[in-house]
Image 1: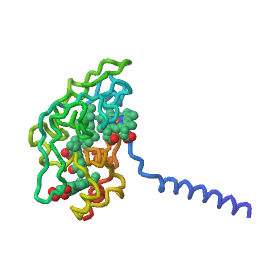
Image 2 (image 1 turned 135 degrees about the vertical axis):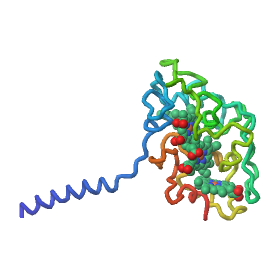
Image 3 (image 1 turned 90 degrees about the horizontal axis):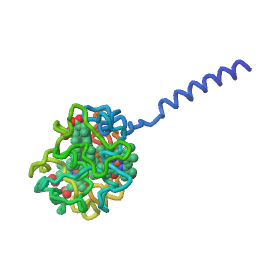
Image 4 (image 1 turned 180 degrees about the vertical axis):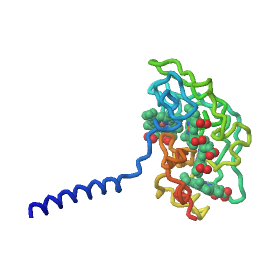
Length: 231
Ligand code: HEC
Ligand code: HEC
Ligand code: HEC
Ligand code: HEC
């Protein structure tokens, strides 16, 4: 009897340990493990040789860019005049205007991404550099994104990309007929009712760790797309 209880306890322990492994949620890696860690500890090729802070490339606690629609922004915004907009005969959204030519005060969340991803601004160009480490030198002198992650700064740069910076409300969902009710979305995010780059992307982490595309929802089975589109 005693031995049997011991055996059961042992078995329970093993089962509990197994359960813990199986039920552990797929924890997305933090920003430190992504290409958006541009500090000395970053895993990518575009990274600093002396800056130890991670957030400073994008945010600052003080002297951030004054704009009510963006979070404590620190990265110099792009002055690109026009990116063009996506057009198609079946598009129902009507307010997806050109997000080029914006100023600091009216830049949208998508302009934050484009401040590095249109390839025109150095990634180490900041509004308010760190007091503790005022210098930020980039490895190999590489300061700009030039590869596939450069969406471009031409006046048709965003014509071939999923539309951004437009209102996704109940009226649009009804008009389109193939969209989920905006109030019922899970995983993805709207910014003041608008679709922005960061609706699909989370710049701090990725649910697709292998692809590292900073996606809020995995692309496996196109789950990301099906988070909004009823297809
Ligand atoms: C490469 C640029 C980048 C870096 C680096 C970065 N962020 Fe962000 N962050 C953004 C962008 C863009 C947004 C706005 C879009 C959004 O909310 O996802 C944002 C939004 C936020 C928000 C408000 C939205 C939310 O998720 O609550 C917080 C808080 C935040 N960041 C904290 C941090 C902290 C802390 C760090 C450093 C550990 C950091 N960020 C590093 C780009 C960055
Ligand atoms: C401070 C500059 C900066 C900002 C702001 C920024 N990024 Fe990045 N991002 C980078 C750099 C640098 C890389 C690495 C590019 C490379 O290695 O070619 C990168 C990589 C990426 C990648 C992965 C590309 C790949 O090839 O693996 C995605 C996706 C991405 N960023 C999306 C975004 C989105 C969306 C936003 C806004 C929400 C954003 N980024 C804001 C600098 C930035
Ligand atoms: C509707 C969702 C969605 C929106 C909106 C969106 N992206 Fe993406 N993005 C994706 C997906 C999905 C991928 C991965 C594509 C792949 O794996 O082939 C991606 C990939 C990328 C990449 C990696 C390079 C590449 O072309 O594969 C970058 C950089 C990027 N996005 C930046 C942005 C920026 C900047 C914006 C806003 C102007 C934006 N994205 C808006 C879904 C989106
Ligand atoms: C955050 C919500 C959201 C996500 C995620 C999303 N979309 Fe969209 N998408 C929209 C909305 C809203 C529209 C505008 C529909 C309209 O106005 O007709 C749109 C437009 C489109 C269009 C253009 C439709 C047209 O009539 O020209 C296509 C195609 C599309 N999305 C495909 C995708 C794909 C593929 C993915 C996944 C990679 C995706 N979307 C992810 C919300 C989303």
